[in-house]
Image 1 (cartoon, rainbow, N blue to C red):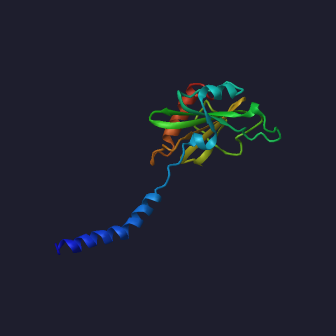
Image 2: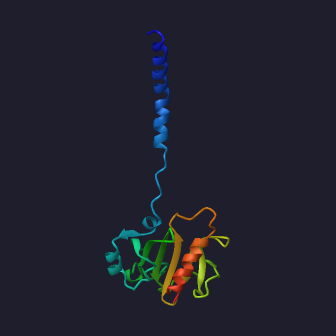
Length: 177
């Protein structure tokens, strides 16, 4: 019995000493970042978003989430519901993308860096990242403004290849008209 007593005392002392550190480590676990679509707009059912959107949006694929967006840089036009946008989160080739769309309403992406590379989208811009590491692509047509981004699923050494491939796929489907 005497030999078990020191081991028992050591176990109890270790539990008392290290328990607060273990509890703090659990509390320090970072909470996951909400999906991009939840950070940029008001997530609503797809049917409600389509009813509240005053234009016919381009559907990139079957959406997994849909959100309503605030107007895009409509200086002097107030809070006009006709200028609200819509965003679709969807999965393509194993990546989750978010495509945002607004009526043009005199808005422009011209303050961003021009981004060549997609002949169908003549008026295109780098909206996030760098030329060698594209993280966001924007383009505008006569009637609409679009912004395409990964939803935090970008591979570390991708350097924007999957985003550009998705941009090309959308252009082929008519998103740049």
